Image 1 (cartoon, helix red, strand yellow):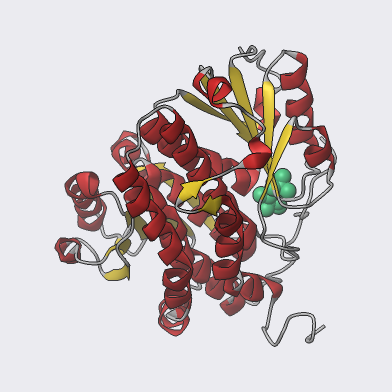
Image 2 (cartoon, protein in one colour):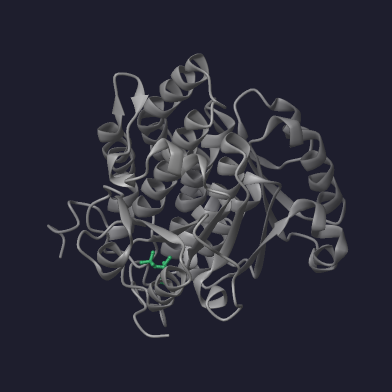
Length: 367
Ligand code: G6P
């Protein structure tokens, strides 16, 4: 009812607005006197240094956190990371041993495929760390160690605040591992922690831009296909932006690594096709802009999500949403906000059941 939704029209909108708090609640208890302390990790520095491979296994949005996590963990800690969907992992005879850290990510902690992957990993001798939102859930109980996300109960089927909290856990882990391996100086840590602490207010600011995004979304209620493109972390962000849109609005959408477009997808671009381009990684701006130009020449309408100051992008985009400056590894936390709002307002405008999309369940406890 209305009271449960705290005055918001839908749980999804309410939960989007709870993101600043979910983010802060997830990092605050793990930063002490300017140091990252993850007691629940239960690993000594020696054990951390002994990790030879990380495998991140999850379903749905939680797996998208894994794709982001891969770039961040590899970039900062230089540990090789594989990401797998839980439903694939368990049937592919994965290669893991006691030097492998398996990270399972799950909001509910009850997803059957993820739980099975956890059991399989333990059986093969790997250590399993759960990043879980629901306290005391099956995955939380069975993992060797649990790092809780403190997003609070999430009702809307389409995840927003749990996803945002999961990202924060990934950042903290990557920074911790990098520190232990001597790859992150005190100055770098201090500057990253400053950026981390700025995220809640920045997310709030992006949420407050909702009217503009609603106006824009209203022009695309009849869209048939939407393509999300990005490179690196921006590809991971695109996957989540695309999933949000298709699961609640029923508009077909796909996420593509921007450089892969010309190997097939571009044949689907027609006059008026909406392409959402995500470009938060400076060193890839030029490449992205040229991909945007490629689709625009074929008639696409290009919406871009990029960092403040990248005005260059305006020559290749029809509509630009700017996110504030942050550490490039944290860009997902900001760029996803306008994409969540976009999906939400498209679904509202199309009269969809936003909180309970057809055929989907919040927690999938059967295989
Ligand atoms: C379901 C939900 C998705 C969610 C996925 C994983 O398919 O509809 O939104 O991302 O399960 O759920 P979990 O609880 O494991 O994060």
